[in-house]
Image (cartoon, rainbow, N blue to C red; front, side, top):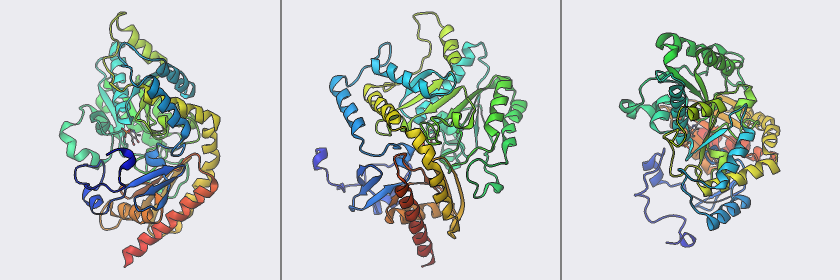
Length: 448
Ligand SMILES: Cc1ncc(COP(=O)(O)O)c(C=O)c1O
């Protein structure tokens, strides 16, 4: 069936095994999105919803951007695919130069991947390759953190710290991974912005070095703000302390900025926002406004140079890459996104809108089923009180909000809110009003 004639509800929902979804529940009561424009979505019942999480944090520029659609269409007409191994096309170089203008310090060498998960795997591998090229092949350990999310490939699953993502796959995880504790302390309840307490939790890295031998540790990977477990904002001084410990022991610091990258905190990267420069940054999602899958890894020049210098000219320096590394259609979307960031000054727009959004978010703390709220920039997490078993409150509340005309992502019992940067104050008001209605309806449903 051509896409023009496709019905909004398919004849069969059976064959598609949906990702991170309660398939049985969904197939009894489907939620299908049929249209998207600006900050709004339309579902298959014809109901309009406000998109309060920018899709999965990936559409900050709004839906249906003509500039991106045109760029993709023109690129496809001219050059639909060019293989990225031992040859290339101009656009990917142009894009790398543009990305490097926004990355902090000298993280100027850009490796393209397909998504956030493959960016994380690439970052881990680059850290190993760098140390090996530097004569330190014994560095194999990667340090992650509890409550971290780094995608669903084996490396990312291993360094991540969300128990449901790990349990089933425990026997195939990557060896050599150690976790620091997460940074969410009981006194961080209803704290907006960076908590004052908890910087000392970074000393877990020092302790790991003492226990396992710092000379065996390749990299430490963290999300500057843990996104998927509900906006865990780093305590003041925490990231700085991680940087110091990494420097002391020659460990590479990787910031996974798949969510925080491209303006979510109000700066291009959270690294700049918090004043800490890592050695490697991963990015994806907003790179193409979420329209075409693409990720990238930005590395310090010395990492690139060390890997280059370790191989003779004419040989492949890094045996790693993907069929879809920096393909024309993704590059075209990303270049159009770069233009829009610049023309609409979107990082500053996000920065200026953030206080209004945060105020609205924290106004929800009087609701009786809300257990905690956290937020920074254009990110926020609302923890719902436990309802008989973990995850139930989050899912039921998500469904009540969906009915109330607001769409977002819930993880476990946390509602994750991340508005688009093109929002006006009236859209933020609508998001907060509809959250209030949805959460209130959820509370009533529980009592009935
Ligand atoms: C911090 C972080 N890293 C990695 C990923 C994985 O990205 P993807 O789903 O594009 O593979 C995500 C996805 O949400 C993420 O939030």
